[in-house]
Image 1 (cartoon, rainbow, N blue to C red):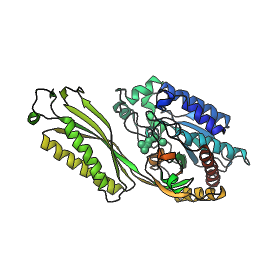
Image 2: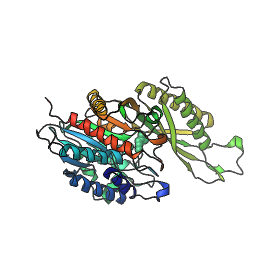
Image 3: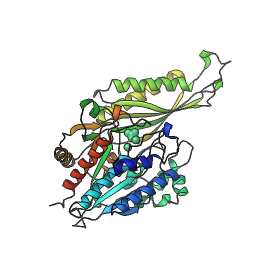
Image 4: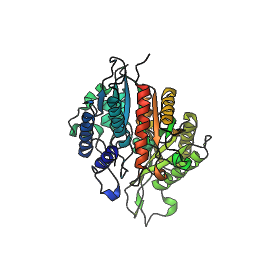
Length: 410
Ligand code: GLV
Ligand code: MN
Ligand code: MN
């Protein structure tokens, strides 16, 4: 087993769930901290100078031979969603350490400084994802951290304080202008495009972005046995109609690529003998085409209003995230394509349906991404798997890509 695959297995053991229920290692937990310390050690072993910023993003820096210019950033995230697999995010960080270790080993320092970064809170423990990246681009504050809550009602600010981080210092995590001018992220595909094509490496040209909403539907909680059907204001039935409207609107979208999901539902009071009085649903709508996505969101919201009016329910709408789809850097795509040829394969140009830290960092610098295949397209699931040989090949291509990009700017 390669060192990379051994380390992936080592991190997978740091989880709040038993192995048959996948890996749960959410951001700002003791388990996450344990994983981060391990990775910090691996960065140091690779000769990288480590530091953490005010929100807990971890950097490992390899100084270039022409210092002073902007860094090239490479990495991903170490936190997981619930009952996840071992590769999402983790692979991109550990592969970056391997690739940079090779850069250092082959002919000394690269021209430009390269920093491996393990970005915190990519997964939406606090409903909004990519929080570490948002801090890096200056789009996070202590006030926002006090408003973001997890499923147990713990705020991001409280979770940070439990790990001795000060929410007031969040603005310090913003990368100064000129600090870095390129971000490269290697990730598992999390879909089945590469596998179906028999391709071993994806060159990402665009990243779909989500518009996420929390809709609260309020009716009247009532006795399920004594309240006649005609006299109910059932909040769940309204929410259920809205969920079906999400599916219909996404299916009817002009691009044919819009996806819409209701992945979180909370029904109150939540007993089988009470007509639901209040239901919250979280809606996630994504596309690489902003206009098509926003048209779907508008359609969902107008249907939701009509449903609630017809059923005598109240509707409250909150935006959880509204990100902009990204076009990836042509320079990175070219470097990846060349590195693929060097490794004897042909990269397949494709869009990313998942969001990634690269989507948020693109607000500050050009970004590029590479994918390796996911067996069965499975991800956000315990069965997430990529052939270890493909994981190793991804490192080869990443190393070739970084070598091309880390030459000093002429
Ligand atoms: C990332 O985890 C996503 O949900 O796309
Ligand atoms: Mn994920
Ligand atoms: Mn990920």
